[in-house]
Each structure stands twice: as C-alpha cells, then as structure tokens.
Image 1 (cartoon, rainbow, N blue to C red):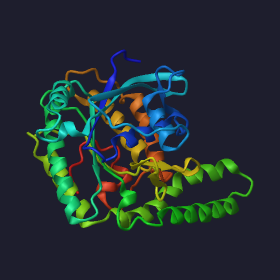
Image 2 (cartoon, one colour):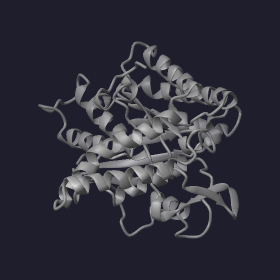
Image 3 (tube, rainbow, N blue to C red):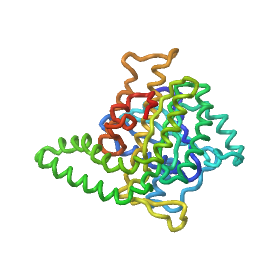
Image 4 (tube, rainbow, N blue to C red):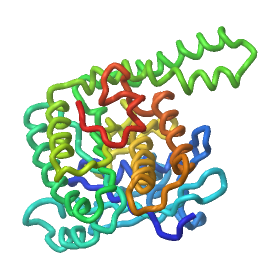
Length: 351
C-alpha cells in the first residue's frame, strides 16, 4: 500500500446533502461485495466522521449533524479483506465557500488546497422543476470553476457528478413499496428455481435485482430538468482545453427511498429508519471515483504502468458492477449514459 494518501473532496452548496452522502458511506464498513472491499476508519477504536453522521441520522445517538465549517477531513483505509490497500482522505467542505462574496477565507483555502486532490465528487440536488434547475445550473457552473483549478495541474483527476436526493423528485413517492414488492416477487421466483441452493439464490439476487429496481427508478430521473444538467456537465467535459477527463454521473439518495422524516429538534435535518436505510448510488459513486483515479494513474504517460492494469482497480470494478446489478445503484443498458457496459469507460462525454 502506498504511503501517499488518495485525497477526495466533495464539492457542493449548503443543504445539497454532502454530509449525508459521506455518512451513507459508513455502510461500506460492514456491507462488502464479492471482492471484499470495505471502508474503515484508520483508528478503529475512534468514532470516525462517517460513523458519527450515520449514527446521528439513524438516531443511534442524540443531537443533530452540525453544518460543515471550513474543511473537515476523514482519514480512512480502503481494505480488501483485512488488508489495507489504499489510504484515503475524504474532505467535506463548507457549502458557503462556493458562494460568491460569502466565506471568502474558506474559498481561498479550498482553492489553495484543491490542487492537491486526486478526485472530486460534485453534489447537486436533483432538480424537480424549472426554478430548481436554474439554481442547480448556477451551482454546477461555480463548482466546475473550482474543478478547473485541479485540472490545470493534473489531467487525470476524475470528476464525478452526483445528482442527490432523487427520492425528493415528483415521481419518487411510493418507490420503497414498489422495491419491496420486487424483492418479494424475485425471492419467491428464485427459491422455486433453486429450492435447495441458498448460495444460488443469493448470487441470482446480486445479478438480477438491479435491472428490476432500475426500471422503477428510470421514470423518476428521466426528466427534462435532469437532461439540462447532464447537457451542461458534458458540454464542460467535452470543451475543457482538449483534456480527457474521467467522469461519470450517479443518481443518488443517501438515506434510501421513502425513508426519511424531519428531525423534531431541527427541521433542517432528517432522521432515517435504521432497519431499512438503503443508500442508492452513493457507494458506487465513491468507489468509482477511486477506481477512475487508479486507472488514470496507470494510463498517464510518465507514470509506472502495471502489465494488464492495476489489479486493485480490476477487483474494485467488479464490486462496483455488483452494486449496480444488485440494485444499489442505477443503470439502464438501453441508454449509453446509464449503461452498465459503460462503467469501465473512463472518458465518456456522450449523452
């Protein structure tokens, strides 16, 4: 494992869900794919930032999540089994730092440090109407200005766009019930198909559930408003100084569908049902950013190339694919942008 950490920064305005996004990644500490990757706090006996957020959201501890001030960094290890393979620094920024004329000290600190980062995750609240899409487009433009500071120094930086809070879009109501029905029907079918083979049932769930869940999610995100955001993002990707920028877009809900309610002590925060919290898209977006950075490092001239590609990246891609096929991230093989086959394509700029 390299001693140099891989640094990933989330960029997003206040209230787009950056902190909840990071908190949802805590599930990667105990829910692993077939290749066994997990995300662990470097000091296992401490309550890390991700677990702190997760525990607060799920009401396992009291209090509310404080607004991020300045830059807050979580020091983590990506492990494969028990072996640490990548040291990670995950930085959450103060949303106001992105706003012109507000929190200028934080903005200058971000600009000064952002050039040192290895991956950027841009978070937008998925817009559900014309007013929100105009706001989202202004916010995206400002975030892309910050992202450009990194790309001036390193062309291999992946830029991942997360369309957050898709569970709040107009057509999302009742999705949880639909997903539960899909799960029940699929399990019944598979148990009949493999009556005495629990392992075969589990494997089939990992490969078949995602397509069925995707058919439920597709109408929610297939909107004019989201198309406008995608066009803006890919126009920037295509026209940024002739660079090839590793990029991908992930629809996301950090808490899961139909699974949050206002916190009585603070109406600006939410709590979730611990028993059924199912983040959608967040783990795949995060792991893909790491995967893209590993592959970009391996492909850049002047850097050491590993014959056949980075073995960690190859295994990581398998777990990322499993997140999609098992219904924890969105794909739609009929549309290139959301295609599962396109996961390994680092430099996609086509709708």
